[in-house]
Image 1 (cartoon, rainbow, N blue to C red):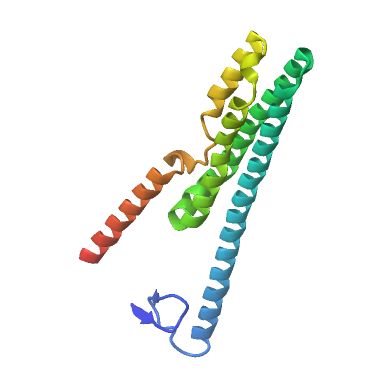
Image 2: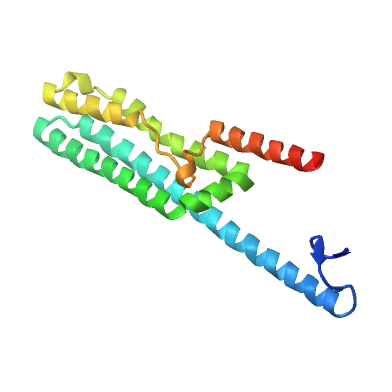
Length: 194
């Protein structure tokens, strides 16, 4: 095996490519290959980032709709608007399922490679917990008992934040990120000692 230096990445080939024009052609292939790899990864990361921010906008809208519904004076209209807001809130959980189904495998790879986007994505999804605060701060306790019971169920459901999943490996959170870092460090230490 011979090592060819001066390329974009270190390359070991079973034959000699260290002559003109093979070396330059191989370097061109490497540069364009890496460029396309990063472009695809960047586009996927941007799609996840964009989708989580779309969910944040919808969470803010649900918060607004629920507080407007609970501020309604007429109990019949209040009940109807609250029911619609709860259905809207439940549709966000369906959107979470679709996002996890579409991006979970990519998210695992993304988590291993990029911590910054992971942090901003999780921070964005934590906005889903703000909905409980908005509902709790409304005067829901002064309304009829059956609506109070429904509001308490919504409060209970809002205590669980939306989550990004990394395939079957679990929820992308701080504990999983630290676990991946520990395993990565262990592998690097093992490879350096062999």
